[in-house]
Length: 423
Image: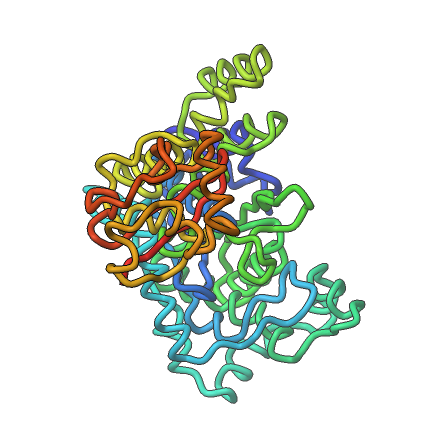
């Protein structure tokens, strides 16, 4: 079997390993491993994508992967790496979000693999069987308060102004039991997660050793952070979602296209399966001609295709062309509304749009401050309808200018868009 741990290390996907004996175990035959995903939103996001890639590498190397949707633990909220307590979600919200998380994961892991199909499980299925007293008796008694308080994630929160609730403090017990349950049911001996999961992972390893007398292992990888050093996520306000309804294909593509030169090689190793020698060539091309952004373009294309498919990549390309002033021919109103979702808009009745002078409509819709300003823009070649320059001040809105009978797209200058939605 290919040495998956070496592959992960060369791609910057290993920060720490709980036991160096893991490498020998991995080379001796397939192991079963898991990673957990909290359903705090109906979509996973870039902060989760490194974990997905780690699972995918393991599966490609012949190991058996389990993705755990944390519907039970999601109702508590993992305090690891958090400066304050999360807003608790209702059982209904968590269950609804879990459906979206399952859909996201099914895009990347092979659940129909002939020899090592991925598995998807929900920890609420086993946690719901516990009463509080049963959990304290069967699980809680095996944890020592000193060891729990010594964990870095706990100490950081206890020393913060926000403090830590008992519910959050107990989270490590819940995740540790997940590991034990998966060991008993599937023979799972390895858990992978971000560097903030070290304490939770080692808690599970200790529980398996105490109750089953068996060895278990953990691998952590560095968290993917933004330019300010914050991990990506909903609570940090910087999430880049895998669901196009939450982050458009264009915005998703642009996130990777805007990666700094110094980071693009690392991102290519983490978020793609491109061979390392090809990544080195892309980095060299970027050093030689940084203005061409060759590596960033390849990164954006690879990841967008992986997450959103060829259709999503095509849509991102169309959006880019629209926003840079190229033709909108062939695009439908729904596509344009997706591309231009954040630009100003005005709703107007059809009889106030069709056949009306473009300059009059621009003033009425608030595109320009007045009809005179609109005429001056036309005379200076600065007013566009559907990315076509308005040639004359007395030009009128033709039926063909109303995309699908629903939308007229104004542009002034290079990037200032305004939508007129026909109602």
